[in-house]
Amino acid sequence: MTRRLPRWAAALKALGPGEVLNFVVRRTQETLRLVRHPYQMKTRNAEFPVWCRARTSDLDVYSQIFFHREYRCLDHLRDVGVVIDCGANVGFASAYFLSKFPNSTVIAVEPDVGNFAALERNLAPYLGRIRAIRSGVWSEVTGLVMNEDVFRDGREWARRVRPARSGEIAQMQAIDIESLVDSGDGDRVSILKIDIEGAEYEVFSSPGWRKWIDRVDTVVIEVHSEEAYRVSMEAFQEAGFETAWSDELVVAQRPTRPPAESSRPD
Image (cartoon, rainbow, N blue to C red; front, side):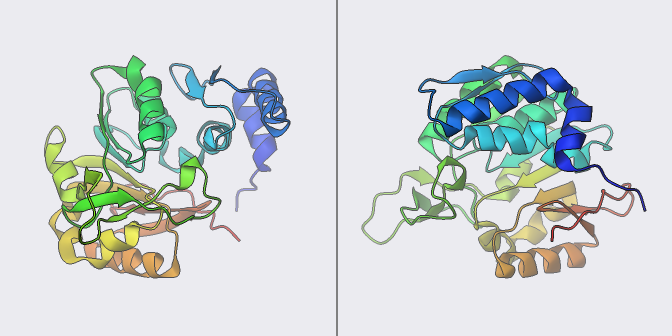
């Protein structure tokens, strides 16, 4: 069994002391609330600098995506074409994929207005390779509103949607994954990333997943409940995918793909 470095040591080895120091300085400034305006962060894991909004969850997302490289479990993939980023937040994961896989294109979906504006700013340098959609992912096309109930810590990385109630004006039209897969270039999707704050239960508890899953090579998903984990794993098993844990993510791949690094969280 390969011995893994502690996360900070691994980050220092991968990024170098300068980038780590810059992150520590920004983290300190955020903790002490010394910054009020958006600021740029450079990282060797993204082709272009990215913007973080001050006093939001953006730096935490930056830490996950670029500092600790949450999606390193996909770095071994080759010939990556279409990537669908469901729950794209401010675009950091999309930027990681676009930089890691230079021949890829990304469809990024995010429902929150503020997050989506930040996403557009962060992904603007990748013009021609990115399509941004302000919408929520659901099991079917229906009217959605932002969920006012506090989820997790209630910050910007925990925004949720729900169906509009009777008499309520929908804020957006939901998009289902089948429609996203159909809208890609070609017949296949190389990577489907799902981090949709609990709506993954709706996606996999509905039989609609059978319409698109055979056209997806790799699914990487963060599940937010035991029920969501159960229905998603049942879907992957039925579809013949192999699954592994990588930190907080479940990676489901077709058997012809090399297995993902498995490191199930405690």
